[in-house]
Length: 163
Image 1 (spheres, rainbow, N blue to C red):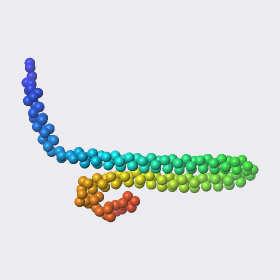
Image 2 (image 1 turned 135 degrees about the horizontal axis):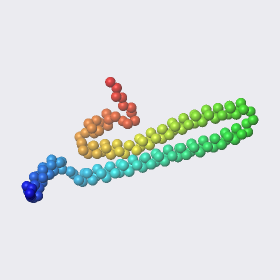
Image 3 (image 1 turned 90 degrees about the horizontal axis):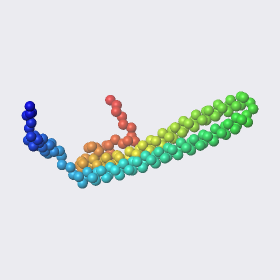
Image 4 (image 1 turned 180 degrees about the vertical axis):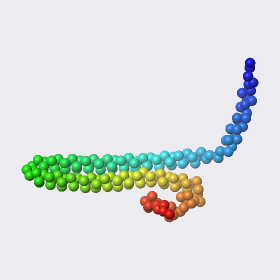
């Protein structure tokens, strides 16, 4: 038995009306501004990527230099221990070596953290500048979401979220 079938051209009109109504609700886009913002964003991303790579290279160089220094010191310490004939002296040398090595590793960890912190700040800087610039274009009367530059919290200043 044939089914009650509505021709396709009769059901297409209500769907087209719904689509048209939905499209009318969308804001009109300024494609030129969108393209400009995209280019600005890409430039900011490229500068951030450059900063990230330079930061990674600085970290890598620091770790390589530290590793080389540690290897040289390990060889020198081994040579000193080989020449040692007194067990008490050898024990003292090992204790001294362990103390100095621990301090060197702690110092190196601090240097690596400082390098990583600096690199992170340099990576975010172009993105923050791009965001401020874009927000300024979108809201010409306002800066930083209504705050002046002097009022805007700085990334370098700790923010207190107390009661």
